[in-house]
Structure formats: structure tokens, C-alpha cells
Image 1 (cartoon, rainbow, N blue to C red):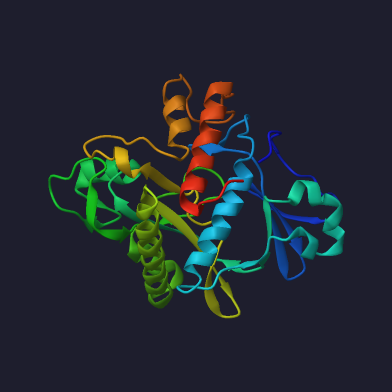
Image 2: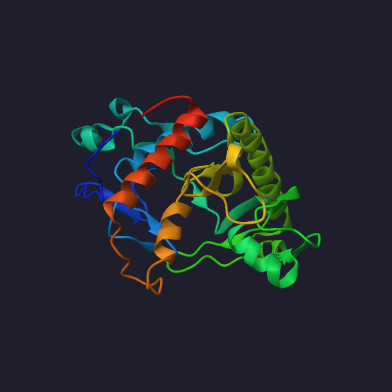
Length: 296
């Protein structure tokens, strides 16, 4: 695992398709090269400080889950073996190794498919106001971090800039049609259930997560990253205690630190002290090791 952080890539001889909050994506005809940098975003702001090796954890963990869930839905993964990438990428092997993947170029669907198994984050905030999340009525008397009776599908908009907005299933149906929306819900909950059951056997509760899907050859496939500490809430099972916030293996640790600052959550974000960087790095790596049984 790299000790030198990768903030961004600049492959000037390859077409930059998109620079996201964390990933740099390059276009290669009918494929994409996805490079996970060590950038970290909180409250939808990319922070100036990187978490060394974070991109490797995100990539390797996504590969693990793509493989585990491919019986539920096809995904966009082609290869993570740099020696099998197109020749023009070989000169960047040192940068790409361990933190990149070659994927199918799907047409992304404009919705974040959020699944919640526990009451936390923006879901907890919404529940306190309305006893519902995204229009789904929930029982009275639930506490923060309580397990929900069943996992629920609570989609949000996918915004390139600013905050994603929680929306109802009906909102998504109006955008994508009922058939596609029903399929997204079915797939999202099926992946969450399989992954969360597996993770619990490894000592991790997946409280919630978000998936992205795209269309490829007329079929819905799973794209982007999947079930990483960036896109999910991972809690240590042996410390789970409903009725408040939980310790975590994800970037909630960084969010909690930022909440102690007088920062208005708009760019530019504050620098992170080295102690927070190192602890975050350890948490990401620990989550990967517990889930996959391997180190990086």
C-alpha cells in the first residue's frame, strides 16, 4: 500500500472523460479507465489533504464485491491487470497498479440507489422530522442506529456539484419509468442483503450504502465503486449499541473531526492533521482486511 498520496493524475495523451470527487476517468474508445486517487470528499467538498493508499483500498474492495455479487447483476469490470491494458497505458503502470480498473463504457443512470438497513445519517434526521424516509413510513419509537424491520430503498439525485438530494421512488419513476425503477430497487436490495449478510460474518455491519447503475447493451449493470468505506457506513459489529452514533470504519471519522471546526462546509475545505489522516488510513485498511481476509 502506497505511502505517497496520489492527489490527481495527468495523462495528457489520453482523453480525460471525467474528474470526479475521488476518481479520474479516461476514455478509451468503448472502454473507460477508472483511477481511484487518494482524494477524500466530505459534505460534498473535496478536501485538500489526501489519505495515502485510500484509492487502492477503494479499488480492491470494489473488485472483491463485484466478484461476490456478479450472480445478482452483471457489472462493468473488465480487468485490473495493468499488463493487459492497452499499450498506451503501460508507461503509467507504476501509478495505475492496484488503484485502477478497465471497465465497460456504460450509460450511467442519473440516480444514486441508496439502501438503508439501519437508521443513521440523513435518514435519521428525516425520520425525526416526519417518521419517514423518502416517503417510506417507518414505525414510531425508533432510535438512532436502530436496525430497520427490512432494508429500504431510498434513492437520491446524482449531482456533479453540491449535495445529492433524497427523493421518493415516485420521483425516480417519473425520470426513468416504473420498470427500470422497480429493477433498480430489486437489484439494490438484493446486493445489499447478500453483502451485509457476508460482512456480518466478518464482524462488520453495513448500515447503509449506495449503488450506481448504467445501461450497457440494453441491460442494467452495476458501475462505479461498490460497498466501499466511501459509499457505505461500516460499523464494528462487536461495538454496536443503538441509541446514538456508532464507531465506524468509514469516512464518518473525518466528518466527525470536521464537525468540531468552525467551517461552513463550503469550498475550500480545511487541511486534515496528520493524526486524522493516519487513523482514517488505518480504518479503511482494517475494513478491507476484515472483509477480504487479505492485506494490501
